[in-house]
Image 1 (cartoon, rainbow, N blue to C red):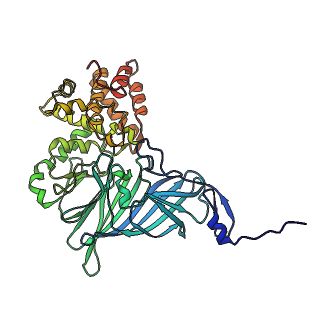
Image 2 (image 1 turned 45 degrees about the horizontal axis):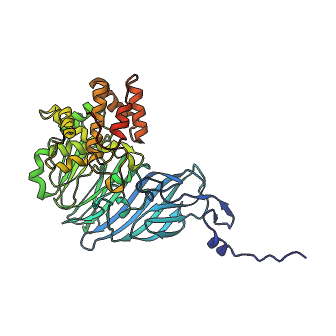
Image 3 (image 1 turned 45 degrees about the vertical axis):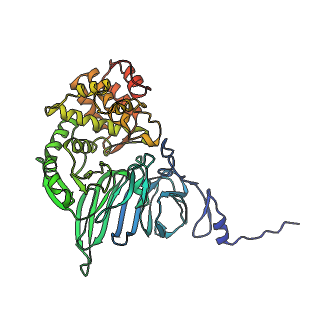
Amino acid sequence: MPRSVRLVPMATACALALALTACTGSGAAFQGTPGGSGVGDPYFPQAGNGGYDVSHYALTFAYSPDTHHLTGTAEITARATRDLSAFDLDLKGMEVKSLTVAGRKARWTRKGQELTVRPPSTLPKGGTFRTTVRYSGTPGTITDPDGSKEGWLRTADGALALGEPTGSMAWFPGNDHPSDKATYDIAITVPKGLQAVSNGELRAETINTGGTGTTYRWRTAQPMATYLATVAIGHYDIIRTTTKNGLPVYTAVDPHEAAASRKVLARIPEIMEWEEYNFGPYPFSSTGAIVDRRGDAGYALETQNRPVFPGAPDTATLVHELAHQWYGDSVTPRTWRDMWLNEGFATYAEWLWSEDHGGDTAQETFDALYDGTYFDDPSDGEAVWAFPPARPSSAAHISDSPVYERGAMVLQKIRRTVGDARFYDIVQGWAAAHRHGNATTAEFTAYVEKMAPGKDFGGIWKDWLYGDGKPAHA
């Protein structure tokens, strides 16, 4: 006698579908694999997500500083890198109101920073799909392992969004890891009298019906990592100029910092010309700066196109953050272990600026660091040797002195080995070879060796880049 078969309703079958099986709208099961949470970054393992590559973010939101409430819509265009039954987005806090994939309602669950999406049908490998997330709430501040604050920072008259290393998930859902870069359209509606500044170029400024608010529409046409996205909301003095070659310069300065900032920000065209001479063609379509009120943030950050400064910057800091547009923003580290490729280069740009403008030479700065006379506090001098720049000791230390100063010392060692002409070929060629892409330390060392055949870099890599402690010889 044949066994009886109990038919399971379609809705029940869908509810029982786990990671490897989902249901189509017609009730037919499909096979796929979930994208997975996290990309396995050595310091932030939950950052980013697997199974897809984002090409574009269209972010639309309104924010009221009086209530600290944000209402947002994120349209995320991505390509599946495998047959996907589910995928994750990074979003910390906020309430998800609705979610669609390819225009169809999708199920989702949340756990910590993970927003897990189960589309109504398979997302085939190689296919492009659009996910739309509508969300709202009070965006929060994230405390980094080193104790610094990022995410959505409330300011005296508005807000400032900063993302390094994982802060963007406080204000929009995405693939929050530097290995996945995308273009952006960001539209921000703020109350009457306030301004909203972001990355890229301002495409439109529209006063809403009734004059209650203004919408600012910004576009970033070159790929950008999530941690480099920013929004600054408040009162700003806006200055628009150009460099000698016509590159737009857009600066937004809190009125309380205007007088102190004016002289140094006026040097942006000069600094940009000097950096292009040393590092090669500028990789983006505009430049500038955002200067917020001192105390609103505790650090400067190389947000793409226009770095953010916590109060009026000095010239060295401006040189540093603008150099990041080549090293960090255009050539972005593949993992947070490769942070020295950002900070070592930008710190070395400060040394070169000093050398070219009547200050200490790069070698004199190198020697002072090695001898322990660079810092007033001897403990700061010892901190340079706490760990090798290419292998920070933990997530709490990826922004410590070895990544900056000792990273720059590696570059000076390379320069001494190959000579000035070949050194500038290397730093310019490196920026060109990985323009708008990602790179690792291993790729950099291989590139240096390729560009200077016959030179021995073994000691530099072993003792200065990867070695523990202070090298025996400078």
